[in-house]
Image 1: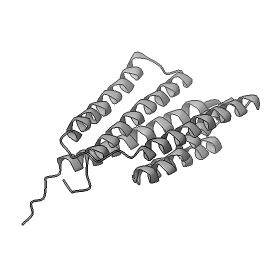
Image 2: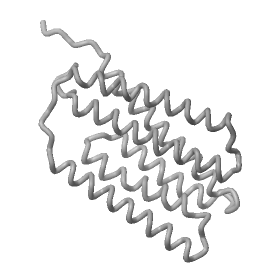
Image 3: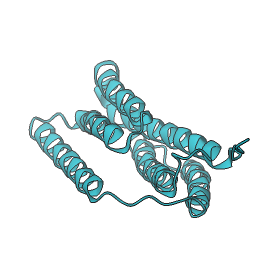
Image 4: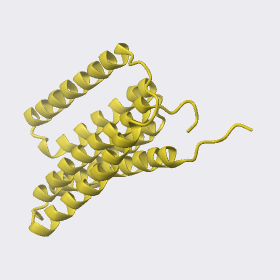
Length: 189
């Protein structure tokens, strides 16, 4: 391991991937519901995806125990709480406002945009550039879906894309962290 890898970073990636997995699954289930394609097969597919991603995240959490731990910075926790609090309030306000305007079909696109935007301060907070990519993909997807998808299909298609982006982010996060954990330690000559 290089000296900058520690238990905090690896376990943080694992926990982040678990959140991406869970919220991605919720978005995918919303998509299945909105598109009226809920079935034993589709739900089983989502559950298998959850198990596969969670299995790797749990492996990382266990592997992180073998790494040195850095002191926690309480400032990080406070900023994280503020960013997430603002995100939830913005999602509620967007959903409420769109509902009052009878534009309910656009709620998933608006929430996807808010979720995407919240990744930008988190990328800086956690020094994790992949959050910029995830945020940009979600913001772009929210705009593209709102502009290009017919209103009758908007909720289902937007939700599916959002869920897939979150799962791709979980997969990339897990892949990079697994690579770092399994990378052999360089011996000093």
